Length: 202
Image (tube, rainbow, N blue to C red; front, side, top):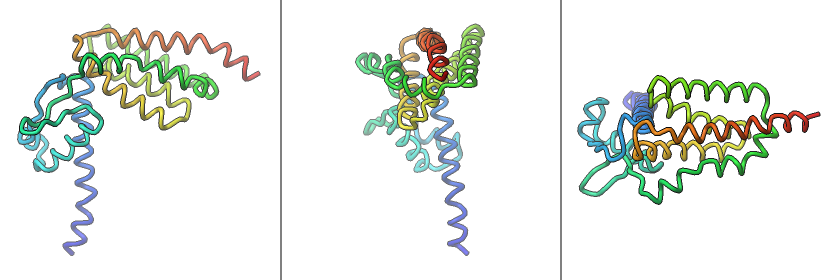
């Protein structure tokens, strides 16, 4: 009976860990927890009603995707990108351009309509001074653009880069509109190739 209970409890614990992981990731990516914020295990364990061991596992997962930095004897804090890292993370379009042929080969009108909808929502979020929503829509644009190609590896890479890029925006200045410029640039490329993609299918 005890073994059966343990087997049933395991998925529940995994679901709990995943929900905490997602909650902290969202808080970091949407700047509710800005770069440099301390993430004390004891306080987080109390907030999420789990053990410190459970929190430690979640923090280790976030450290693996470089959203959290773990320092011996100092604990965990939200990663603060260096100047060099900020420069490296400010060019997600390089991956997009490399994958553009596959995107073009698969892109259909519903894809373009979905991307346009994301841009409109991102612009509305900026107009409403809703920074977290603007960041979320900005990242979603790049991720959905890559997803069109069907290349799951590159889509995963862009997802991780988009998450880390949010730290650069947060470290630079609140309300930074660099993401808007990137989105507009990518959308211009996408709109510019629509006639070509249609003619290629004839």
